[in-house]
Image (cartoon, rainbow, N blue to C red):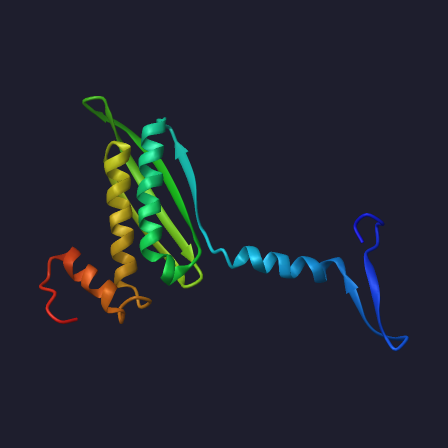
Length: 160
């Protein structure tokens, strides 16, 4: 169809028109194969600061670890990361504001943090995002995540 620039073909049964096949009919199953792969993506917005390759690698490794933890719950999603400076320095290290927004089919989760340096600030924001997800209704009845949440907030785990 592509080589001959044909957009649709008739479907005949016993020389009777029973339907029409279009290019879209072929593309839809192919797109479903891609959707079955399920992925998390990350988008960065950085303002007034240079993030070096080591810091980028650190953030991607932390994000990969985070997504492995929740991949069976959310299957797919996008993490929007916004990092900017407040213009204040402490011993040459800038004060950083980091805001995270995770959008999934099961909801949107938001966290933020401020701190000195990109790596510790990103780690705190990701940890806060983790806690918000653990507190969410999506995971409140799953014992595996409930134990992790109780451990993180410092309460005795007992039998969950």
